Length: 235
Image (cartoon, rainbow, N blue to C red; front, side, top):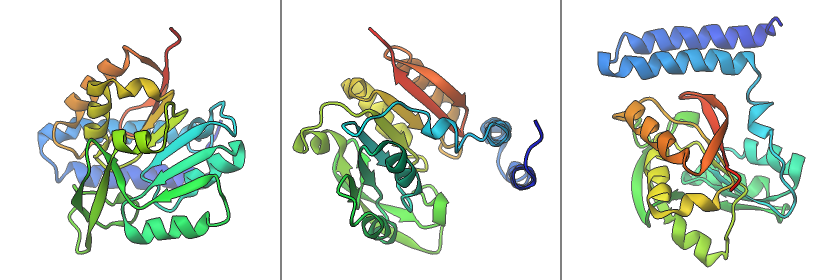
């Protein structure tokens, strides 16, 4: 099936940008970058944003964690389709304030101005629109708060999360490694994660996480360094 013109342009634009990045990075980083480029083309061809990312069986009683909420677009789509309880974690104050305002009249969507991590803390974040990250060099930065994931679920009496979405520009490695090491990973029925290639040792860390996840979850879709989903295996 032929791609819409807009998607063809997106694919060409991304490929050109990826080629530019490849000319700047060292040989060690080229494999993740090339993998990302190939995966992204397939993702666009399969309309992943409107198919895979919303393909769940959720109910209004289910709890969803949107970690890396940005402007709240994905949370809005999930709420519109399923009407479930959504906790949106966004550490950048302007973005978090926008999310809070956007869902001010929606009792089921809760905005938290923090990131989720292994423990409470703070970190400096380079602000660069949807690529905001502690690994990004930017002329604008913000000191952001981190919230312990274990403390958050305990204080809110949460025992099961139907869907954990992670798009935290490199922070996904530390958080998933912590959840796996502590056994907390079992409380998440689905894990939708975007692994980022620009983190040191990205491929080896991603492979190790995926190997560990296979003990409790199984993939439903996988586009390396773009998006993938892991669903809890039936005992």
